[in-house]
Length: 193
Image (cartoon, rainbow, N blue to C red; front, side, top):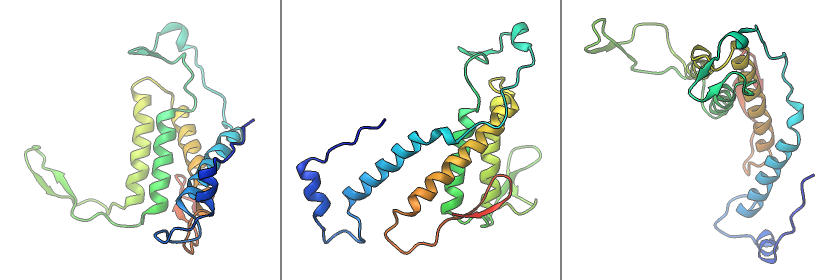
């Protein structure tokens, strides 16, 4: 149970005050309090994010140590934290930036690696490159032996879900008229929040 904090007298005064330098109906103090409540609610509602599959075990842990440094696959690692954070960040970026923007003036290494030449492949868009970044972070850990592929996939799904929930909550804190966020999910589905 989260304890409700009592506002100190100065906070009550700030809550009532309207500063001329602030634009919009909410003061910075009220916005901070609202944002803190959003964070508290997200902690209280974390049970809504369930994992869709059980953790895989193929028996290899009995044969191999599977250790990298001081880390072991025997430690809790499902879903993968790196992939969760990567997809959460990517989802936020896709909500705030134009993911259909084509990246200009790309270069590629020459065949001997000594110079750069203009990139001649398919057009690269911000959204696709952000998705590749999250996938590389998620699955690079699999290659290193720290996670299984399912850990990375579930981490990507969970990170996206958490970001979408945060965006839903933050939508209401905007002072300006705001129609919401539009983005393409990792699975290709286009959504409006």
